[in-house]
Length: 164
Image (tube, rainbow, N blue to C red; front, side, top):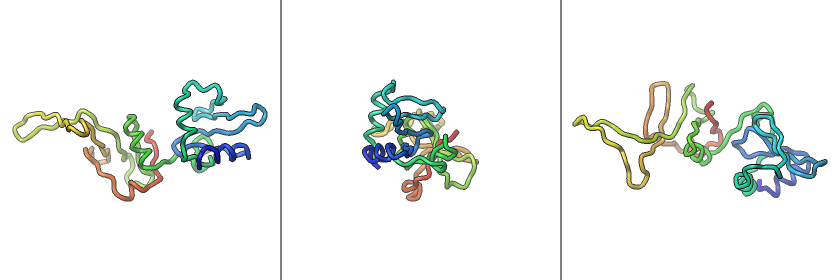
């Protein structure tokens, strides 16, 4: 839902969040404002935000959901998100995985400064004109696979989570 719908839901008593959030926002009728309940359990009046640009970018989102015990960590659930969000988080240096993956301790992360040893025993820095020196690395029980490719199921899944 968009923010207009999310605000209406808050004014009707709902808690709302973006899919990846550990906390939620709600309407405080007495203060006539939105309160932000953070993943750390802190309460902050939206008018007191220190990160105005970040807060406004959240308001501009069309991905608001109702917070509940299934999707919100502070309410006992787990935050999940889409593949596009997973890519955004990878670029910020976070590790992510699918809840639906069978293997334990499997995740993906952004690999940087990639190099390899060629048959002549030379170390080659894998710099690429278009993408630089980055790739997605799959970390699994058998080791690390550089250049992991997402399947159709991975790209369409909404069960991506953060790795702790």
